[in-house]
Image (cartoon, rainbow, N blue to C red):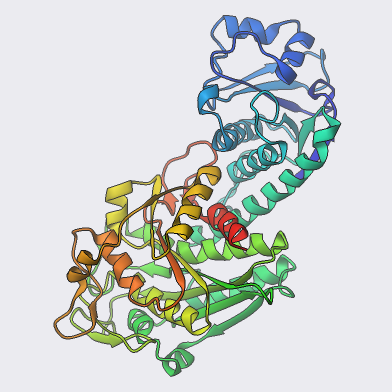
Length: 498
């Protein structure tokens, strides 16, 4: 879908469908919506009066124009209450409008920029949010099943004020970069585990870099099983040893010398059966998404490279498959991580933290100043925060505060959990330096405490996105399947840090 910006009135838009908006409670539409209403002889005002248009967030009402204006049809999307309006409402309204527009079989669609007028949102930010919501909502995973809906071929942001056009264009381009990168991550999350093994993931990443024209800008390297043994990555190898699909420790670099090195690490278990500590069979098929962290850090890197970020970035994707077999790690085994620390394996289903431990050690060896890991790590995070909010922990409050502030703008909610020293008691082992599980109590926190044990000098932050990586419901721009929750937040966070 091509995305362009037009400097004209929405009433003059020469396309199949024009999208305008309305706040909840407004009786007389103003701005661009008012202009459309007048051109249609007060049709929208009458529908508002009759209660058929209320402005509730995501409400869609479509009317035919009968050649009174250029577009064949006009869609009115509700923006919700003005008191609650912001960037996320723009994404949500735009996403709902885009899905309904596709169902009308419209090929050429134009939209006013929600919030850039009386909504009071800076035009570039409003345009970015609108494009993000639109592109994310129109995403489809079509590898194994084709869509029956139509395709929007051209999408236009229509703005009458010439002075705003430059900022609208800038915001539109940024929104497209972020949404497209997030959709690439969604593709990987949605792939079945028999197709996306660690080795195939590594090959797919190399192919993505080539297809996007970023292979010249992003360095690609990986360590295989033999090389992982040489560097002492015993924790990660313990997870991988039950599968015939060998691990791939993927390292990507976007170099900007002179800038502090930021390491982004994504948990990448391409399928997590729980190993010997086997998971229940119910919904085990969703464990193909246990590699969502790796997909998210890849999507973030793609967006940073496309946006020509000045950040100095290392992305680590420690890809493994966790299966039970005669060679699998057992509860009670002791393994040694890259930094020499020994770990007693209490549960082979607490595998993600073992892979992340070695990845953190690798980032420390590379002298990363900031390490951020994102992982579908604990069921406790789902119990505590559900499928809306991710948990965040770390050793630097300024870093955490920046992430929390960023999340207010990106719509990807974060909530800080404590890492009090008292929790360390739960992961003390009688025979090793640490246990890999502290039990059910405060399990999200004790997992964070475990990871912190492998941080040496870097500022570090851990984001637990369990329950946020995949969804079986559809709402606004959030569709069934992989979400790639975290791409927008990590992108903006890295930009601020740089």
